[in-house]
Image 1 (cartoon, rainbow, N blue to C red):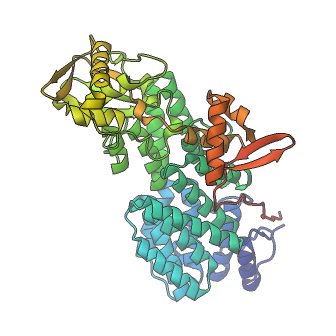
Image 2: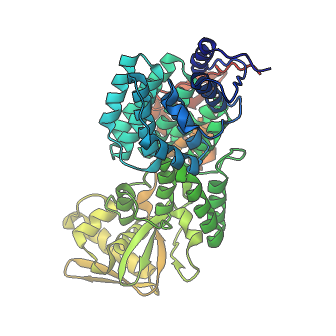
Image 3: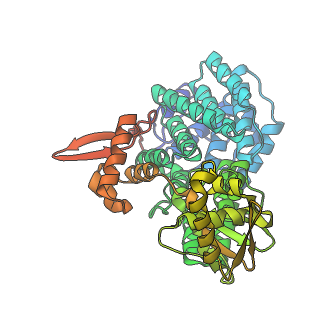
Length: 516
């Protein structure tokens, strides 16, 4: 039965709910005082986010101006974004823009709602504004305001293009949430930290965090966790809710079903209209597949054009690709472009495949570099550096370089012609074709760490078998990783097992206490 409602008891119940302790469900009459209605609905929102109740109905605009009404607005915005309800996000944004509240606490809550809505809509948000809001939260003695401002600051910093700073902001937000023992704040900060780890090229840490969160976070979080975990691990997680369109898109891509992939990708992007950071994550993937409608962001564009020739795919998307990890699509009369290996089945049958060996090497690297340069080609010193990664020395390298060019010319026969004259080399494609770009291959260390993150407690032999590497190679890699602190070594009986941990993240514990 619902508990009886009084302002003091309801306020106490809302404060307890923030710490994961829930009283009985509360129902107040529709004609009750606004203060009672706000508190009852605030508690209902907290129950839903914790997975122990139904999501409240549409927010009554009149309640926002009541005491704690702006706090209720923040909870409604969080619920709408978690459920990826774009219509509700748009409606709440209009409401937040036009409403005015009194009192320092409510004004800070309203400012937080507006910042979250701006981030959800993809509008620029000044991280400095979140610093000020965190300070206001401290002055108001509102832990909920401080923790939300800290997490939103990490998202705003990443959106401003300062990914490394965003990692530090997210680490700080998670430590604060854990210290305050606020479960929902931990889920927000933990998910944000995982996302930042992936975006900065450490998907194995993202995988570790998200895998732990999936065990404890309530159902409303599973969609976000499932989608980010799939991007970090590459394989759609069976049984994850909320990532169905992404799973379908990846399956269609691997099967070479371009129409099916397009339908699934469009459905996925439509679903993610409610929260721009998630939409941007999938847009990064589509851009790396050469399937995006809009221009990619700078880090993706640089990878596709090989401004950084020896980088693996950006944004921690290496795990999504097939083998080979990256391809270059060569085009007649224009510059080529890089795509993830996953894009190969989606290419038209008219595009020829230049797959010379099971383990692509220098010949493929040379052709990939020339295809990316286009009809203008490259001077020999620039081409050599783009293939080998160091400066050409004619005395030392001329013989090997002449052989490499000869092999490349023979390999592309029938697809392109390689011209060399006066220290300049160019490739003239006669038909579109794709060639692997081995320069994007991940280091053994990254592959071992990624495998470790999804195989907790694996031995060196387990890791070697799963990766197709020699046991000696994996043992050497593990020794270096343990020495640098990138992974931990433990004893399991007579076996040595290895695991990877984020230096900030600790597994959450279930602290939700709910009563019917």
